[in-house]
Length: 233
Image (cartoon, rainbow, N blue to C red; front, side, top):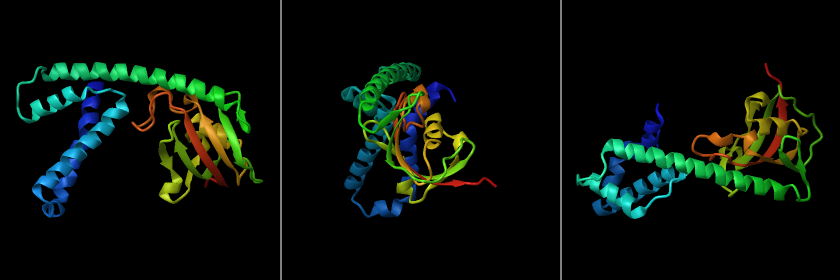
């Protein structure tokens, strides 16, 4: 898939999924008034599309955005053809990514410089920082071990992007199959411990980010409970 196609999919996949789901909910929609249902659908589409657009870092001119939507929906004359529109979006996407990478890099540098001055914070040679919440008395895993953990991962702004607590069950995985910050951090923890890991982006997902959920150059903060070391079969 080309980058051009990826951007188009990013902006409109959510709307298409919403339409598909709407077909399955015809009975429920019929119970609402037509005006109310249309208002809710319009708002929902705008909300979901905006979430996708926001994740790219692109800043919109709302008047022009709405004009583009209106002209297309009402088959009015548009000032750009499809090729021009694709090229402009591609350029905007690249520029937004560059800005986001640099902004996050600066935030990360400031965070780790300030965080290492706090009481209870340890910084390793790799740049990983951690804080011991409770220290267990069990064995410490090796990088080749499989571990069973509870965890919650968040960004610097407090956004939680993953949580085994929310899913209601611990996770199991081999330590040599996760990001370097996890591998290093868990090998410092005796079983029964709870640590907070502060993982710099070079030990996480780097300039690429992950899945539209973790932006480029993002510092990752994990609360981790090491429940057990599992013996591989």
